Image (cartoon, rainbow, N blue to C red; front, side, top):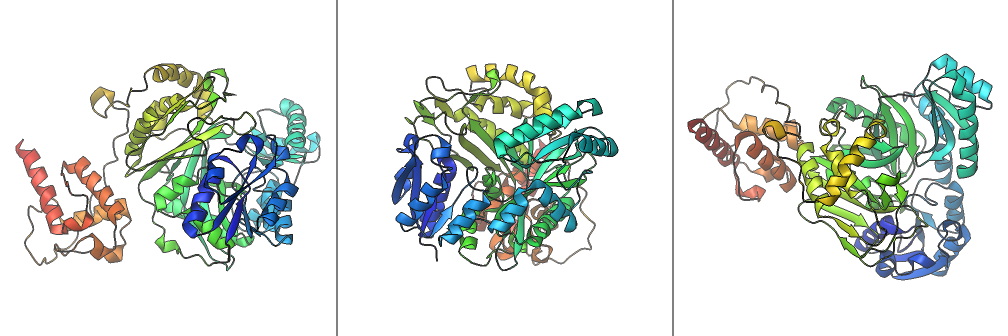
Length: 581
């Protein structure tokens, strides 16, 4: 049993892990560099160990110091978070050799899936679709050009050991291949200490969709829905959302089942992400696997109500998954904006400084994950991420408006500090984003226009997304529901009001918006939400939908306050009033 866990990371993910440990009754050991000695995670920890100066190679990447800190403090487990050593199989192997439980997949699985060429071959063997290309490293520019000429341009050259959006070059014609091949290998050697690259077809108008999987060491696995990560700049994600509403529900479920099959086929354990590119026709192709917790994991947590970090720790402790696939019912829509200490007007140059003001937004289903507090110094030595602003709402349109409101409330100020807050607000106003028709190259195309809009929003943060009415409509109207299927008349235990809205219509609505199982449907007007296994979150979705569609107001937020007969009567009364008006 894990009783004391060392967090081999810093910033918001270290705080996130510490909180999960607290709730599990696990003691926390934090490690910190000199510049992080007064950080939030140090204050949360039961014990903190200084592991070196600010430079990452001397602290958060220094394996001997981290392992020594774990052994000296009596930790029996290590959580690597994301980044730094999270996908280093040697670190995982050293932890195991020292008797420390590593919160992540086995070292050999991490080694296989961390090598993109090997991962492609293994997933091809498991039956996952791949883009045209090769599954083995390309040795020479001539060999690579021959492959590119055969599969057709554009192609992308990728570092086998790459990650974080680095080590990738798009090539549009044969004459440019040799130069791109040499520069990509040089980048791969400098950044990843491995010059190996491979070649595959590049999809110019693709969507980036990733599936969250969770597997235990007993052969069980589930998928927890998917996230769309297409809003990225130079392969670096800025905004993530879920679900991938541009894909039909049946296809999303198929993609999830495929991801679990691929993960289990290599013996994966813990939380991981299978990433796919989806073309304009909706065809999905396996791209890579991230064998760790993702930055954007809160999107999935808000959609499913499942604490991914908690599940990671329990799986590492040898527990069986307590969640079954049928228990996973993503609801509503969630959006995450990465708030970075960068200046978009200066090509996203890092803009660290002292946080004189840090006021985070509040309100319903609004979450801000950060490792900083007001008065802290944002260090130039690490990733520029200040925090992650995440919201949930019953549907995507409301999530966009909630995120805009939260961004307007967020205040990050200090000498020299610049952030991406206003850029995100400009992004959420763009018609292509609102209509959910953007792709992975959208930000690179639209950036000049977005930067121009950012200035006015930074000057007047109170500007809200215009209301969705008349010529000011910026939020896509909901797609009309398909006609309800014709059903034979059914006996009811008590007379119902105007049959223009019936219990059957209500059940259809709950099936569509709250994932009501067909076997749980009822025609009993005296039944309540608890009788069909739905919770307050489902009630909120229904409440909002009835208000939007029919103008029916249900002021009490308790799902057990109303019978289904009373709900139908409220809707019917609202529609009658609207008709008389």
